Length: 136
Image 1 (tube, one colour):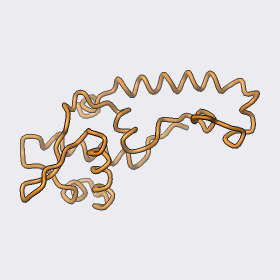
Image 2: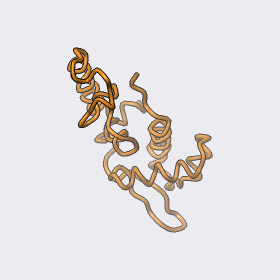
Image 3: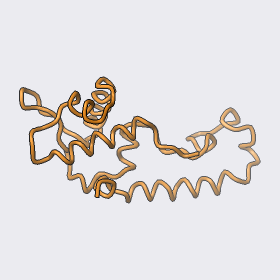
Image 4: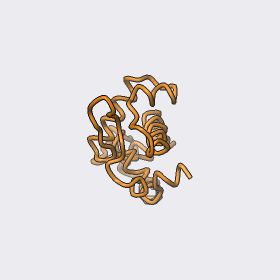
């Protein structure tokens, strides 16, 4: 079953905190962690991944913290997932360069192609679903 990981879920919670706080001082990982009841070390790692992937920017110093690097209306669920996890994958056999080790039926499976089409449609939906759609 396709499932969004806890890391992606926590990242979305953190991004919502930053989104709701845009007009105030910047938030630091510790504040986000406390507000969302998520371990601070995990929040810090997730925010760094989001920064590395161009979703967030950080400001150092006493009034520092995190802010959006790009307009939140341009950030898709798919880009968040890719920043935090590996690509979306519906089944084991749909990984890149799948082999018999991924699935014993890979050579004669009649479900792989329909699942691949379904996965592609899910990815399109995730690319079209923007962060602000989740928050509004």
